[in-house]
Each structure stands twice: as structure tokens, then as C-alpha cells.
Length: 118
Image 1 (cartoon, rainbow, N blue to C red):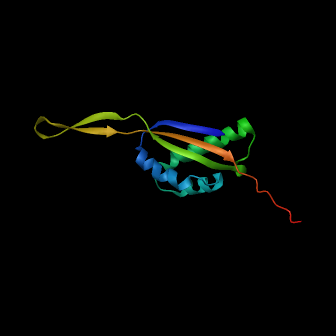
Image 2 (image 1 turned 90 degrees about the vertical axis):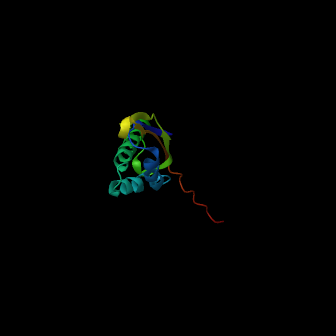
Image 3 (image 1 turned 180 degrees about the vertical axis):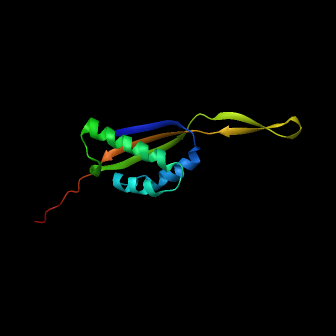
């Protein structure tokens, strides 16, 4: 299992999950292609995280990126920073600045076994 993670990314998990759902389960080449052309803010950090996982696979396990696929891409809730916005007549409204924890797992593609006919 090749892993990479990004902690306390300053965007809400709901917005990051919409991008993560597009690349989950794809091969690494397809995922990189999808993320490079996507016009969402979360696409850039996910692209960098995927490149980091590819570098981990190359350095630690000597696996090339052509033989990898995304097994798991999990977006969890991080720390919520609580702020206040001043309103009329001395009131204030809460503002929650949400963060995300992103965990990426890569695995080697299963080799296709050819069955010989007898």
C-alpha cells in the first residue's frame, strides 16, 4: 500500500469530495489527466497529493506510475475554526471555517491472467 496524506487543507470537505469522487478508482494516468483539466480549487492540491504518492511508490517500492491505480481516496472532516461576523445592533453571527484531511491509497494494478484453452 502506497499512501500520501494532506492534513488541514483549508477548504470544506463537501467541496473536496466532489473532486475526489471524479478520480476515485481510476488509474493514476487517468486521474492526473482529469485533475489537470478540472477547474475546481480542490483539483490542484489533489494533483499534488497524487504526485507525492507516485513519488513514494517510485522511491520506496520501485513501482512505476503506469502500474498504479487509486484504491482509496478519503476526505475527512478536519479542524473547524470558529469565527464571528459583526451584525447590526451589537449582534454577531458565527462563521465556521472548515478544513479537510485527505488520505490517498494507491495499489498496483492486478495483472490480467490469461487462461489457456485446452
